[in-house]
Image 1: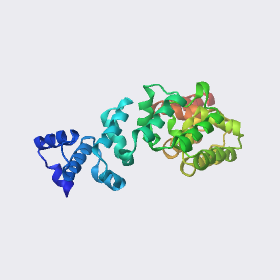
Image 2: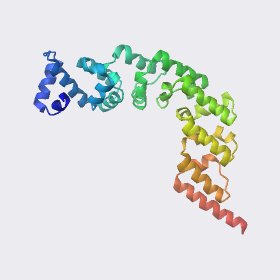
Image 3: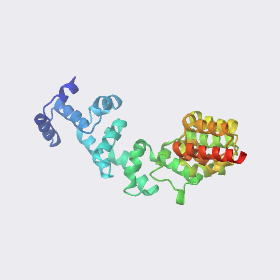
Image 4: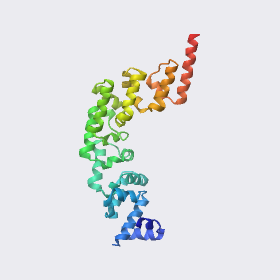
Length: 285
């Protein structure tokens, strides 16, 4: 109810409240709480959700919330981006900027060696980085990825720091082992595949990798070596692209490498299909 009433406060009153609260001129807890709700609204953070997920926010001073926004903004994130992140992870609203968030930023800068321009890109793509432990999550994941070959020219970048929030034992290793067992590849062969196509490590075994391996082995019956050369096969939709295109090629007795079958647009694929059919007819004549 208090939130409902504060939503209807006229702009002049809101401005006066904000001025008093930020200047530390009031000790009225009700006024301070209303100002906190207004502040969250300004950030496009859902106050109801934030208070439900993070009950500590109710007693937290508004200055602590402001300090979190200030630190995130200092990385180059826009205010809308900061608001989106805080709405996704309300626990950040009562975090300590120096002990909770700064270590992650230093990790991205000093150990991943992201540039000042790439740090906000990385956080925007994977806000979960900000609530991950450097010692128990990010650093072990980085060590594992580097052991696979994510080094030098293939080092972790802002485009794939999402891999750092995955559990090595529960997520990354099981996917590596599935590809080894499902395709009969060695660890080195799988490592080269995932370095070439890091998104492989973000796919679900049950919903993505296993069905596509099964379809490749039982329906396409291709050379598994082709998957080494084109691991991006796993990034295409099985139902919307792989199955329909394979079916059309099979119906017309046409063989085509996976990369050619999948990388082109629907229009280009259909054009190629017509051309291949015409050539087939001409050869028979």
